[in-house]
Image 1 (tube, rainbow over the protein chains, first blue to last red):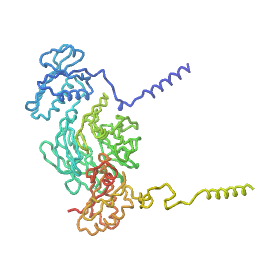
Image 2 (cartoon, each protein chain N blue to C red):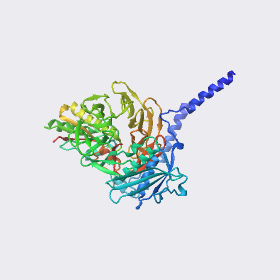
Image 3 (cartoon, rainbow over the protein chains, first blue to last red):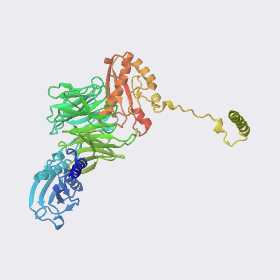
Image 4 (cartoon, one colour):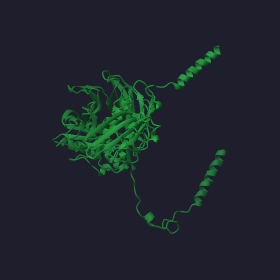
Length: 417
Length: 172
């Protein structure tokens, strides 16, 4: 009896050790809850780009298992061809771009052709066609009562170097199909969304003697000077309600992190270190920040409370962890893992949580940089460099789905989503 | 006894080896060198102590009489072979009537904010050096330009060397 008890206890301990998981880091594969869906194109002028974007939207949502065949046919009526009967749903659509972009979608049950949802979309601009498609898939997702994917509708804002000393700030949809330059001329860097509605951005202008932070309304062009600092001036993060921002500034020549109250313009120094402290991101309901510091002699991820001096190391692996992003208590960081002084190096992305020392790799090869969480923290955007080509990648942390889209811009300086 | 035997063996060995070697024939009549230019021409003399800093003497992206200061990969300390440039810079700075802009630059291998902070550390190293030699800190203004303003865009080491620099110019 005594032996039996020991065996049971040992087995229990072994099971806990072996299968104990960090719930926050678990990458789930919940295929059972995804819907099989096929796309049927009824457009008079077939545009493979439209099909590709719809397919990407369905894939990256993590809620669908889309049929990758580009089916074509009549979208009226409830007829479902026998080839599509194995699906759960058929999404019939028609895109018309004779003037502007007009989209009609019908979501049918594949079993009997019952219409579940029907909607028309229109936008005066042909270029904005991708946003109609994202909106449509977002609606289909909501009709089927899946968790929110409204991040799919958001703009990506990014800065690219065009020539030495010059850059442009551009907007794109997440697939990089739609692109528009919103600021050109001079050196304008570090764009950051200023509000949840994406009506304004912060960016750093180098037009004046010292770097100056501006807030720009992207719809009416109104611009407001926020702050300036010699050395560096970067808006690294914006609080959820937009009332506070984290700045990297260097009033005395040392890069440190400050928190600014946007309404009163009052600033509070959050870090004070003689080396480099940059890249502040709010965590833990904005009571703390994570940031990149070289206080141990190499760039690494640290955290500290906004209101106290205590600073602690977050990441215990890697010797060059030089950029991070955060959402809630989740932290994603890029780690340089090869030591070529010049040329391509291996950079991988890792996921960590603010209260734990363990980390999980989410990329395993190549040059993966500029990680950014979606607004709900479920997706990570990043840039992947392979040879001379750059792609923008997305990883769905719940479904493990990942997608890459070509990114045909010059060298990216900074990106926000 | 052993010591005597060893000494005797060494002496005999030295004697035999000396006998076995003929004196070199520098006139070329009795050796394998057929191209006399190979020995008559002057050979190169390479000083590798300046490796990685070849650009300092020849390149300059500062203006108004200042000389750019170049840095090693990932570093922000002013190396001793930049002393001449810094000696020049302090003379120009002390005589200047307007403010001095100190711009920190990096090569293209950094990312995000960290690279800009590195450029700033370089600018600060130059500013501190100037201030330590008597320049008023209020006469300077620093800006980090990160990797945004390369003077050279070729993918080779000498080009990257030229981009890891601090440029100085007068504020106009």
